[in-house]
Image (cartoon, rainbow, N blue to C red; front, side, top):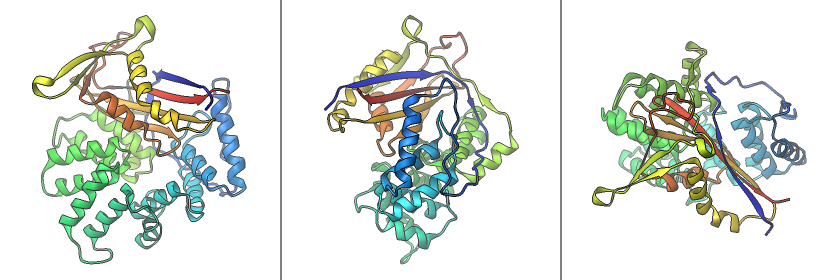
Amino acid sequence: MTGFRRVLWVVVACLGISATQARSADTSDKPAVNSGSTLTARTEALHETLYRRSQSGDAEAMTNLATLMEQGDEIAPIDLKIAYDLYEPAARLGNPVAVKKMCLAYLLGEGRPKDVIKASGFCNKVDATDAVTYFWGGYDYQYGVTGPADLDSARASYQVAVERGSGEAADAIGQMAFNGGHFDVARGWYRKGATLGSADAMDHLAGMAEQGQGGGKDSIEAAWLYGYAGQRGNSHAQDWLRAHPGLEVSSDNLGKGASEITLTHIFGQGAAQKTEPLTVSRLSTLMHRRLDGVISNSPDHYYYFAYFDCYVGLSREVDLCVTSREYPLGFNMGDILRAVWGGRISLPERDADGNPTAQSHFKFGLSLVSAD
């Protein structure tokens, strides 16, 4: 295997929250590409390579290009129409990631009109042990798609799906708890679902934070969550964003080198609870250690990256982190972050620029690149 370069970086720009405006385009159109001196050459080359390969019918390239268009980056903005117009033919060609995307798209009405019959055609092709299969099973039990409804069986299937990484299943359990009046339980499940990437969970958690249901009221966190839910196609969040234009959430500068601020990591239970200082440099070291197994099993030439965005509440503790971008899809860098952090993370009162950290957010990312 070739050598590799590893980089952890901090992004300190503010997050502008606005509704996603999906652009209409023929599926044969090349995605619009921005240009400028700050663009990353490697990401630009990735777009070009995937576009050429997708034009020749390469299902993996279609899926990977769809991932980039679904998430947006410094090269091309988010375009959900192009993304799902790439996922669907890739799914029909048998790409397993695209098959799961289309199962959920038709089942939940995200990126495609809701159509349970079409959804089942994709869902039934997913591996039997996959989280999406267990979510589909829970959905079937809950709504009686292929037989009598059975809420206990639905909840059990959803539980397994969550354990295997389904944010949609966590949202479904949260809705059950919410409908039963258990708001604190619902909020916990929605937080789990948002962390695992469910747009519906982000939207539902935003509503609870906005109203102060099941926990503290935080309209700033609600706006932050609605922003991500809207970007991912949630129609209710997009309506909320249109009704509240121009909102921004302040961002924290964690600093570099000598100017790094020190976070506090609290982990363990009871007498075994421990506290340790945590900086960006330390976080980089911990995540790289966790990635050794991934690197050893990688092909000779690879490019992985992930961006995270974390919201800091009134108590200056991180409430949750979302994976805003990940390539390739399913690399599950978020699992690595959760394994490294665990417990609770708190920030000092001020960031590296002297600005308050309460009710703000910070971004950081990880890139793994094989050496040329």
